[in-house]
Amino acid sequence: MLRPESAWEYEIGIIQSFKPFTFRGTFYYYDIEDFINDSGIMAPGTGLGSDCLYNVPSVKLYGVELEATVRFKDRFWGMTSYNYQGFDAAESPFQQDWTYFLPLLYPKHKVKVNARVRLWKDGWLQATLHYTSARSSQKKFRLGSYATLDLGFEQKFKFWGQTLNLNAFVINATGTRYQEIQGYYAPRQTYGFTIGTKF
Image 1 (cartoon, rainbow, N blue to C red):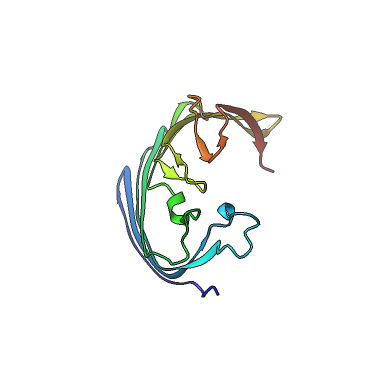
Image 2: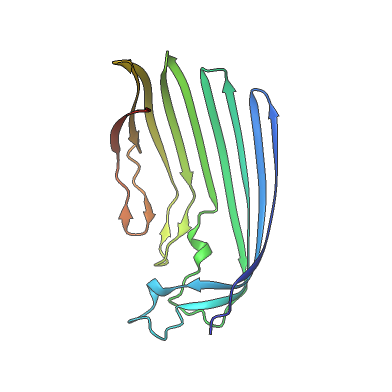
């Protein structure tokens, strides 16, 4: 029989501004008892009576989130963030050779770099770089690390007295081949544009 999950959660952070820079840092720690682990996707047969749901006596999740931003008037804005997550877990008597552990599915390291630069009046170019470290999947395959680059352009203009906002973008501009979910490759590139206004 499953026991209810309970946890103590701790978080501490700091924000400091040194214009034009702003720094933020956060540390978190979760002490979880009777963590409910779900290995249903790997359960043999129908999964009935296969202990695909079970309690892990003790799980400790911890991590750090760091972020730095810079802003130069109305010409440039940039942000860099780094996330780290780790865990410790006790052994469970219900673990079998086909089970997997949910916290293993999260990458330990994630990095994001975002920048916006004004090219001309109301015209902005944006670039976003994402990095995700290697991690396990539900089927126990190792998903490799990957980095992607997204590009976009934003322009505001007047049309018949109404302010319009045009956005054009390409996601994964470098065509990186990667999987967020095991067995399913993300598109090499995605292109699009939007036009919006406010009334």
